[in-house]
View 1 (tube, helix red, strand yellow):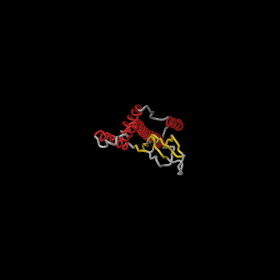
View 2 (cartoon, one colour; view 1 turned 135 degrees about the vertical axis):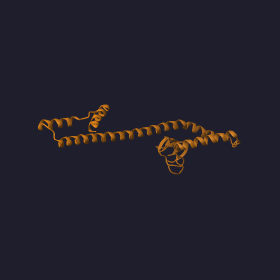
View 3 (tube, one colour; view 1 turned 90 degrees about the vertical axis):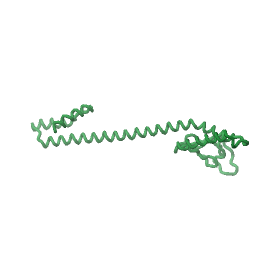
View 4 (cartoon, helix red, strand yellow; view 1 turned 180 degrees about the vertical axis):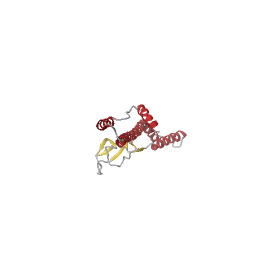
Amino acid sequence: MTQQIEDEQPREAAELDTPVIDDEAVAETEVLEEGSGEITPEEQLTLAQERANGYLEELQRERASFINYRRRTEQERENWAREANAALIFNVLPVLDDFERARVAIPIDQPESAWVDGLMLVGRKLDSTLELAGLRQIEAVGKPFDPTRHEAVSVQPPDGGESGLVVEEYRKGYMLGDRVLRPSMVRVTG
């Protein structure tokens, strides 16, 4: 049984391209052989335990390295998916803007025609799909100006009220999760 284990260890180590015995163990063995001429069973056991502990430490380091690698690649994959999702949704925002313009442009005399119903249905589906993906509209009008969420394109004098408030929204802004995907284009009081 011992011979079989010893025969398997060099073969497995050769397959992994790692040496079976490290240089320190060989040096220790040579020192013991030169000093006493013969190694006692206790010394052999001590050397074997030291080698086994060395292999165990190396295995533990490699395992920790692999766990860190797996975590890192999973995080990179999640980041890549999040960025791809954001890029796709960003490219769909002009379509969402066009649907909003079409909703506003519906003639007053045709509020219940078939084409209006179809347009509204498609718009609601688009809205709900993007909402499920994490897209939400940035609240702008009546809120204090926030340069991280709003892009001021014009300023009007305050009418006796507070300055720095958003008074009109020219283009809707959106957030994807906690990230601003597109800031709102607004007019502010100043």
